[in-house]
Length: 136
Image (cartoon, rainbow, N blue to C red):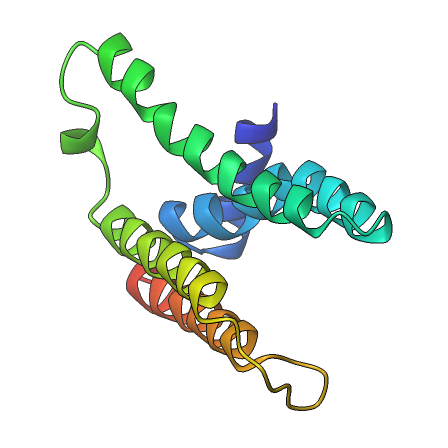
């Protein structure tokens, strides 16, 4: 039902399949992780919050193997090339997160660490590029 709803949103809005799948469906399916991370932050368990995010991303990537095996042909050959952009930015954002853990910034600017601002800017740049790529 969720995929059909996303398809209806795509048809009514005129946005591309890749953008709706990445932005809207990705946001909606990530809400449980957001709630878990907020609960972990409120408890002061920062490692649990970050582990939840990295673990969720790792599991989501591992799901691609059984999906590819379940298809008669190659799963990746049937995908829109716009998903390569999504995958590229997923790798970039994960790399920025790992670099932030290793670097450990000492200064904050307006209650925001520079690495967090860079991750947010890269995320919105990825959404913008994906939107520009998927609009007919």
